[in-house]
Length: 412
Image (tube, rainbow, N blue to C red; front, side, top):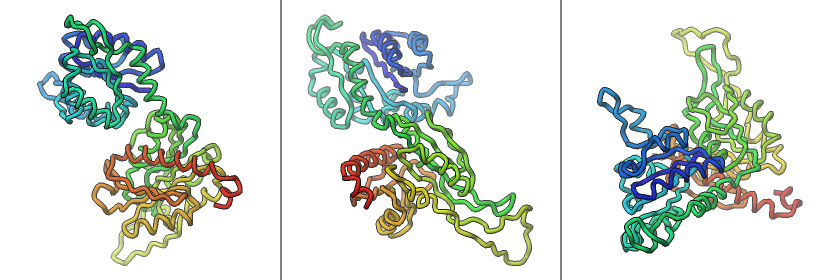
């Protein structure tokens, strides 16, 4: 698991070096992010040597010519996307306030706002600072947002006072990480098959039929499933997206190639998620040479492509099958019809004409239509968050279906 360790300014920062070692001993890859104040207590070189990773210290890294690189300008987004857990230890009163109030004025606070992964913080400060109403309000806000707080312990503090505020013991911090990451592996033992992207249907060697799908939603589902412990196979049409970490990708081009690849991989899967935007039609007779332009009207004869979702769902057995419905009108009606006609267990439907829900964006607005007649509308979320909500609903639905007698399941 990739853990980003935020180190803030306090005498307890030296303990974070040992924390890196302990986390590595549990099999995690650690990248350290340090605030400016943290560098007054311990050097970035120490963490770089221990972690074997680049240590991030600034929001913008100046190049020799004096300008910030594009890579450094968006680094907080890249780190946020690849981290599985954000751990801040020690966490000062200042960083707790920034997190709670949405202040983003350095790399760590900006990273927090961009991060959709679970967050664990281990506060450390003077006893009066810890007990102050402002700090306690900030802690309450963070808890309400799902941040896991590893409470500071009591004892002798660096300021000479005795009381609560010292960094929790490393064993307690490690246990906090275990408590959070244990829930992240809820797909362990599952084999998830995902389709993503468009298909290209040849007209001639130069031209093809396709659609506006970027593949981002399907790739987000594959990445989320892998992070949650599943073995993931991604059958992808043509996209420019990198392969998510821990995912095995099979590149295809046409609908027929996608169907063949899915058939090969479906038997070994326990959950199949069909997020690809497969072309409904293909040229009946693709030309072997480039079709030349003429002044005459041109007629292209099309024939239907196979319905991959319906074809595979007929053979699903005990597997969970999830489809997508990209609509421009009558979203609920069309989604429920697709749910029944395709023999799916869950349909993820959206109005692609709505702002924030269309192709190639970073967000989506969907409603989940389940086989057990539950409709779950979601607000506008990042595609990563939507992916996790789909997987949450898949696990819930699996529990519902498994609770039924076998004879009743067969009759659904």
